[in-house]
Length: 373
Image (cartoon, rainbow, N blue to C red; front, side):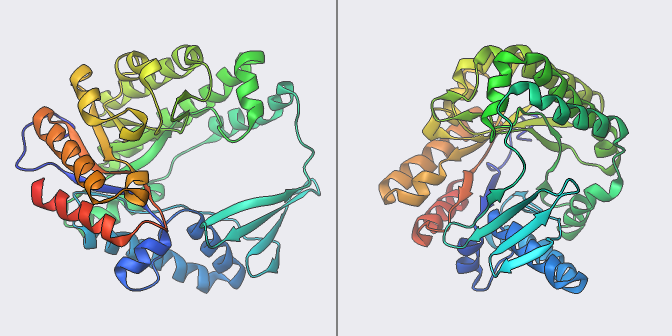
């Protein structure tokens, strides 16, 4: 109903992501959910062997469901981050080395206090010219050409729907479309080698269009795509790049989704008003998730101008992390009231509930959501 803009008996609620430490504190046991923590746990399990890895996968699956059940949300996240590559060497309890066929290697280290699993060393020569991205682009083009999606990729979706007897909704991925945001060279390429950016995005588009028929076949209706491309003050690259290179391809994904009865949700937090017409109209998307009110992307503002868009978010993780009771109460009630007034919204924390978030703040948010939804 939130996606089709029908009136419903309550505002649907969700929780986008949560750190392992925080979920563990709430559940009263170690919880295999989160971001960097999950990547580390999978790496460690792979190093220990197949039995340990199978156990990790089973725990992760159940804990994602247990977390959603504990919160009694309507929109369920069925899985968290992965790092399914076995390391070649365990250097210490938190540090792992990975070798490449070209004799280079990289080293990953886990920082428990931040739940980050990060690269601390890489012997691969650093690229310093956008022209060097040609090889990377060619690899992704060939990979996309040979890509054949498998129903096994969406087993989590089917298992989750069966677990909840189809009484809750869950979502799937498979529609990613983004310029890499962790390497400055890609941002340079948007200016110096836009042809390479075009080819890279086209390879992603090819994969997305191949996924859509299979997503429809397994019954998925709510599919997430896009990719982080903005900060608190705007896009990481020129708005013209988004309008020229990204939005038209999003439109192709949106149009194909509509042919198969699928809702296309674009994912990125950050400030989007500079390209709002391109994102909410030209790209043809159905929904925007991780809409962060601290960046000006609040439910009321978006729905007032773009009533056809389903807004997912409304509550900022930074407010939960550092806000006082009054701030949290004000933000939650504004999100709920806007969702009730305009319809077409799914309300919850727009991003990760961090490890340092006070439990009392989170409990207040959930209490208000359930009381006034």
